[in-house]
Image (cartoon, rainbow, N blue to C red):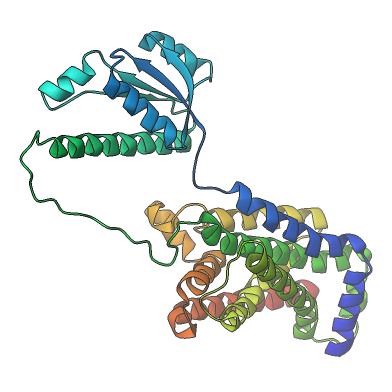
Length: 371
């Protein structure tokens, strides 16, 4: 019986060319584009300078800021009021004001004052821009003091040298961090949306009544709807891993078998959720809208874009009930840290619980509505 159900579902899927394009072409195109756009680094910040000192030290500071690669000098105003006009007209994002006698105060009094004004309409850009220029000013201050030490302006004193090392992502390549998460997001959207439309399509076509009067058990019917999309999602995952390896050069430090074993359980949970939504919906439009809403919430609270630890406490509690957050965490652990099954046993147990809960609910709810 299962053989004929699976054959019927696969024939129904492959008869629609649009489904094949959506399943295989669209996710791959998104995986090629999204990691190039989802960059945590912000460059080409438009800088406005108000230099009241016009000294050698002020010129060195401006040159150091511009040569960092994060800023572009877009305005050079004689007064702060004119510099603010550049911000108000969206010409600049940040103003660096160097007061008069900056060099003299720095040399004679061993301290100088700078003023930075940041356009905070775009909070992310403002925060990173302010952090960048603060770090550059600190480096500039260190360079000056190092030069003064060499000139014996100060008595040489022992210093502590700090050397940092980034574990698991030494070059801080954001693509290594984002590609596994984006791949999980695409698989989630495919699995939940297609599974949620499955039973509803039978209702609209009028074939569900024929299935209900046939000698097919409810669990066989649910499995017949779930397994084909599980197989197709595994193929999409394989294609995504190939793109990650040959396009972005991301080779997992762990085993691919660990990813596939966890993905098997994860897809059972996500497809079960889609089938559960499908048992409640009356039309494909309803199921698509509800599936889109649920998937969007899952993705935003998954830790893909914002670390879970930085979320409010109530949001962190919600992430405990979010299957997507577990798979993104596991993908990054296996890809970047080389984690094995023993390291992700907690996530495996959580996903098994989700799979049993969603699929069990889908079977019970289908029994109730069709009994």
